[in-house]
Amino acid sequence: MRRRGAGAGPVPGRAAPASLPRVKPDAVQLRVLGALLEKQRTTPDAYPLTLNALRAACNQSTNRDPVVRYDDVQLRHALEELARRRWTRSAGGSRAAKYRHLLADTMQIRPDEQAVLAVLLLRGPQTPGELRARTERLHRFGSADELETTIDRLITRRLVVRLERRPGQKEARVQQVMGGDELQTEAAATSGTVAVERAAEPPVYRDDDGPSDFDLGPAPPRSAETDAGPASDGDEEPPPNHLEGRVAQLEGELEDVRAELAGLREELAGLRSELGA
Image 1 (cartoon, rainbow, N blue to C red):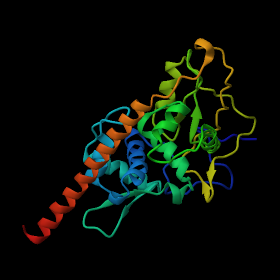
Image 2 (spheres, helix red, strand yellow):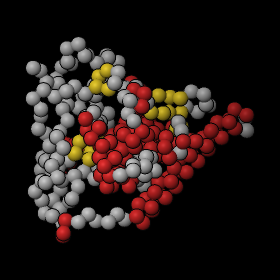
Image 3 (cartoon, helix red, strand yellow):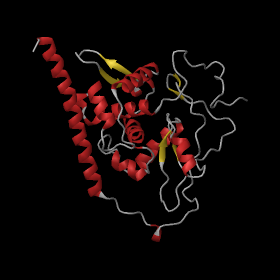
Image 4 (spheres, helix red, strand yellow):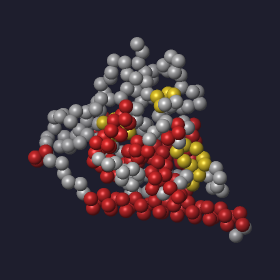
């Protein structure tokens, strides 16, 4: 039977709508999507975001890896492409154009899954321990097992993968595969160690209402926790650094306030212009 993967044709009877692009989103689109996911939770009063607020959210220096400096032209192009995928749209009802994501509507991605995706899109590959600490402002996971369940669902949907564990690390990192070149970069950095075993007949990724608008191929299997590698002394889990996590949280909240202020300034400038001030 035919497999569906990169470069393969559509599965008979399941062709994707012609209006949806088949190329994976680039780094700018992923940063925009991650910023919208994050700000919906952290600054709900300022969401949807104006272009100014979105630029501040994308370019902020904390809770971002890498730190970028995207301009309005890049962001507008990214928003146009995301709108074609039906992942974002412009929200009406205000003087300045505002933008929101549509992942809950288009792909039925749940709030806990959105939180994990947001952090992965904004900060790159991370261990489950890092994810649990960094998703705290977006979604509170009651336990490590609860987070693992969410990660497993995202793996099943071909949205994330587990990378092979690095020597000396206790946890395998998780990485988004919605787009960008992170997967290839990580594979090269770890000597081609992303698990790529393929099932005999992998399922076709689809959301609840139809096929995905990107083709990620079959999901890699979960890396075994017994992979060979130097063990840490006593193989004990290192204690979490609560102070470091608190500082990161406060820095993120400060950037959220700055982004909200930028949006308010833009709206005030528009109002003054209308009043002839």
